[in-house]
Image (cartoon, rainbow, N blue to C red; front, side):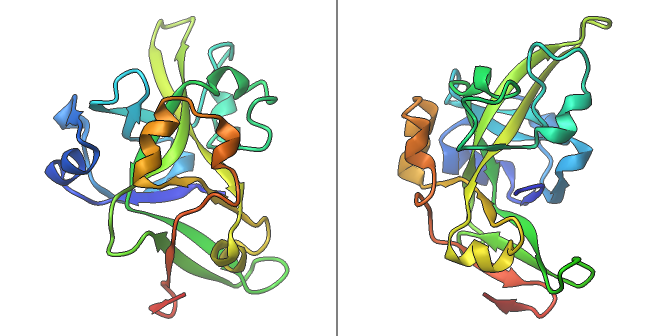
Length: 211
């Protein structure tokens, strides 16, 4: 799965890479580690405004939810069941690009996960990329607060990720640059499931070596 990411590039680099403008520069804050379970606001591009970079909270809250508690279970959405799960099926065609330049996974070295290797994974050269994401808008019926939230779409692990995420064998869907527009334009979601992939580079942070 994908619960830990990073986005360390400055605003000008992000805008140039995605050919879009940050709508609220005060919200833009590079981060070496975004922990999904803290439900941070991170930069995204949504299908309705492909020329704008905005900030949504990680952890999708479907519009029908009574409260926010569901978000702890909706950081990721499995691409194989995304159209069936009540939490996600209404967001299948609410697509977004989740901007990052790396994510973190832990390789279990024993059956209980007491010993682990931490890996940083990206596309090489610390380059920016986009996770495939889906989003939702939720209104707190008590306070009237509106929250825009997202989930990162995951698929079956490729060869590299199977060795790293060696228990659940999952990985986030990382889009090729030429397919980012196709994702936003609602091309069939099945086309982005395994064996769809980009080339990944993984660094073992415990040993400071490439995988």
